[in-house]
Length: 278
Image 1: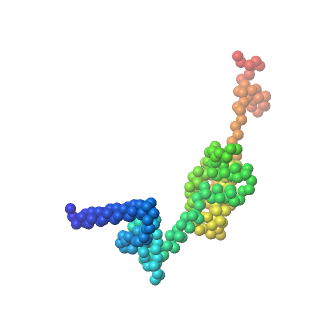
Image 2: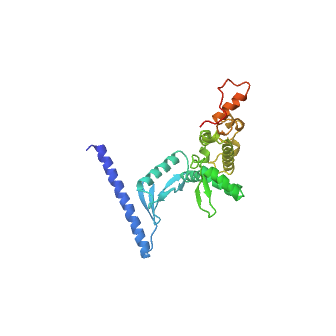
Image 3: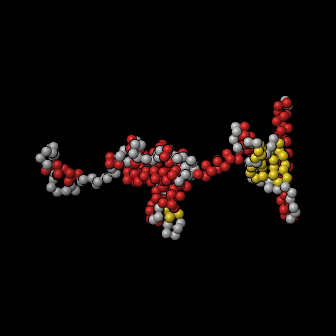
């Protein structure tokens, strides 16, 4: 075995040993709590500034930033492994080297994630805040979420779920191709439905950005991908140029021949017997 593989083997064994110590420490804390004993606060160092904080059993980095101590947390030892805590600790170290505070950066990321709602979340918030009529809310819900609420309050799937491609997409990530993926399949076959759907998507997106729930995008800089004027009007046919196809029943061929014979401009047809054929 070469020295490199030996070194990795030793490191792996050390990591396993330390993780075992963490498990033992947590079990000892649980046993002490169950017995009603006092648990003394302490730090178990993993090396490089990463510690296990007891009795809370949370992983914490002890770092210096801007001339003072900071203690970014990485989660409970009950829910994450030591290797995951080490990865988070290394990420915190990189932020410090880049002159960024890991604590404030983590808060920013959480705030942004909470503010960047998915389309489904945005629709639900919009319906609750903006639409007062239960009937109107139900129509919008069926069109945008593909959900129908029965008289008993039970939610079932609508016949059509037009916006399913948007549901799990953050509002800030919805672009023109995604909107077109929703509208194109129904634009020519259901122009009225498609037109109303486009308008509702546009309104929900603009409202969400205006409420600050679109990942930090400012409303005055936002270009709604579902807008019509100067945008989708150049991609989709105008509704006035699109008509739903209405089929009529075919004429009986005998009646059609008699009608043509009575027309002075019709081509010569063989005479049609007065009686219907057997």
